[in-house]
Length: 155
Image (tube, rainbow, N blue to C red; front, side):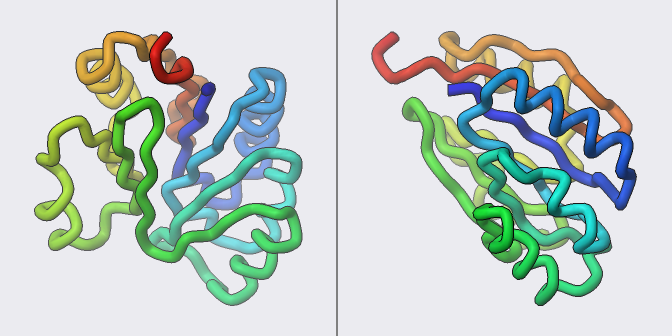
């Protein structure tokens, strides 16, 4: 499955449009946003993508953000969520709670995703943890966007 990761879109409409268009052409199976959308008006720009997100420390009206996610059939998980893909666990949050970092960061076969994640480092870490994952390149460094491929289990 192709998964897209981004964070810190900070109301930058052109970056969001560029990232969304790129992810749509790649037919990603999941888009993870690690927070800091800032204003709810940016969320419709992600429409048509399988968006899963968490709150960031600069997000404004959280109630309206939740509504905008619902409007485009996306999922806003609150401050934290985790999932497993091809035997690799992912933990996602913006990076604002030290307790979460200490609890999850050193888990075996865990890919830790937060706004503080440096995407090239994350790509290299993924490739080391699971040889079937292809190292990816950064699409928009100022918005921290990264696509990477996780093939189906057993491939």
